[in-house]
Amino acid sequence: MEKIAYVNGSYVPLSEAKVSVLDRGFLFADGIYEVAAVLDGKLVDNASHLARLERSVGEIRLELPETIARIQEIQKELVARNKLVNGMVYLEVTRGADTGRDFAFPKGVKPTLVMFTSEKDIVGAPSARTGINVITVPDIRWERRDIKSVALLAQVLAKQAAAEAGAGEAWMIEDGKVTEGGSSSAFILTQDDVIVTRQNGSEILPGCTRKAVVALAEERQLRVEERAFSIEEALAAKEAFITSASLFVQGVVAIDGKKVGNGKPGPMTDRLREIYVEFAKATAV
Ligand code: PDD
Image 1 (spheres, rainbow, N blue to C red):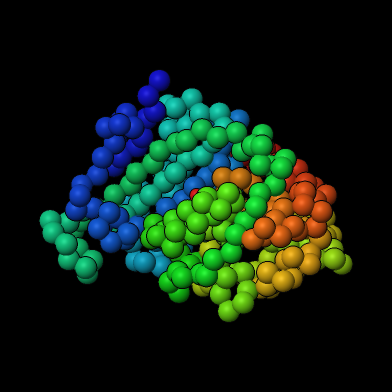
Image 2: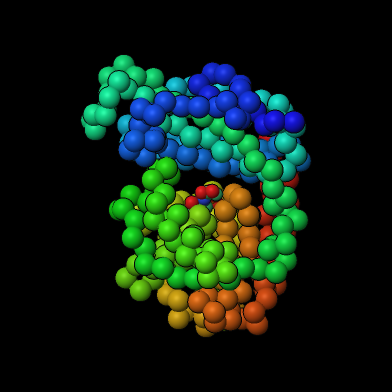
């Protein structure tokens, strides 16, 4: 069965889903995206993703072409039409296609809204059991990483370098500290059992999974500190892990070829992963 995509009001076969070459997402990366997980046919933590979408579009003064409630309806319709059980819904909104290539905002142009789904067994992914290796790269991105913009060239290069090194993620480094992963938030567990992840700010994307994991950990009286950490601290830590909508919680077992902890996902990582999956299943819509 061919997958169905949503493009500006229509549900179309994925191979026929097209936008103009003049679309500002294509020309300028003038757009915002979101990725929400789907578990058992339901959207995971979607209110958090849609709240971040609203914030991101507000920061670049892009008006959504549909209400948030309608966007969720379209996401659900797409999950149903694709008979998606486990995977993700990708959505992107751009400032639309004008008649030429003017940098400033066009007037009277309707934003483009596109969505498609992909299948992935997030809970049963082998890397959830084995953990992943990460490499480090300099963080060469712009100064507004809190906006979930489709301008992802720095992350494309970082994750390609990771792939070529046989690693699953790249941790980006700025001023000697980890900002985040190419497409995930970064955490460590210190030797005295403090969960550390960088504080939100313009240096990182405010991860939805990060936010939920921090809240779930705090509810269970686990100690959490939101601050930057270095690679030296990560290598001296008990555990390290990453979070994102597309992988939930996964252990980091080596950084630049050096083992973290005993080189296996640790007990806290496994526990937080279980807690998150439980939360995801219980609250999915
Ligand atoms: N990436 N940091 C960056 C730079 C990201 O791109 C992502 C998500 C995260 C984690 O955020 P969340 O927990 O809300 O997924 C952190 C998505 C999954 C992607 O680009 O595919």
